[in-house]
Image (cartoon, rainbow, N blue to C red):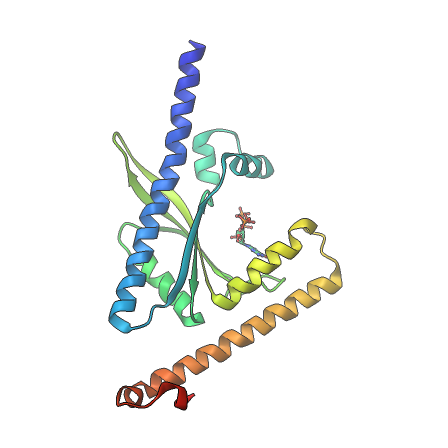
Length: 221
Ligand code: 0O2
């Protein structure tokens, strides 16, 4: 009986992890369609780069313990919403909202939460749009709504967040005050860069008919 129980748990666990892989694949396909379709129609894609990761069983366990979540698959499914994670890096700030709209308006995507850290950055300077969605995954004997966390940010926001994660990971909450201030300053620099690039982009877009008429793009800049 114990052997049978073992087998049952293993099968459940495998299906649990697989459902997140399928949900990730599904969302990645949606995002890649937007990316390719846009690039071929408009000669420009608001999406620069997409990546995904699935939390390891160890990572899930640690987060469950940290959050005081019961070690039960259904509770974990409900309470831990970033087991499947996708990061979309966009060219410009306006593109982050555009991608958010394009994803949230799809019929089979249920929006569970949107956190706008672009309009309201975290106190350390962190910016990104966080979107938590549920997407139906069709398996042999059931349809499971599976949660995926999608982070949408510009290249500059991503640059800042990646390095901040690397530099401050070891401090885990006790970052010295002078470093906090410098970090915030770096986020402001990244933000200014985003604003300036967006302005430049808008100027080029406004000039586009002239460019198409045969002007050299470099001589306009
Ligand atoms: P990792 O290693 O990237 O997976 P939660 O902890 O998710 O239950 P919370 O705090 O409300 O709840 O989540 P939030 O604010 O949506 O942030 C979740 C994720 O956003 C983090 O996941 C990071 O990936 C990213 N993030 C949030 N704040 C920061 C920040 O200040 N700096 C950086 N570099 N990334 C941030 P994890 O699981 O913490 O980390």
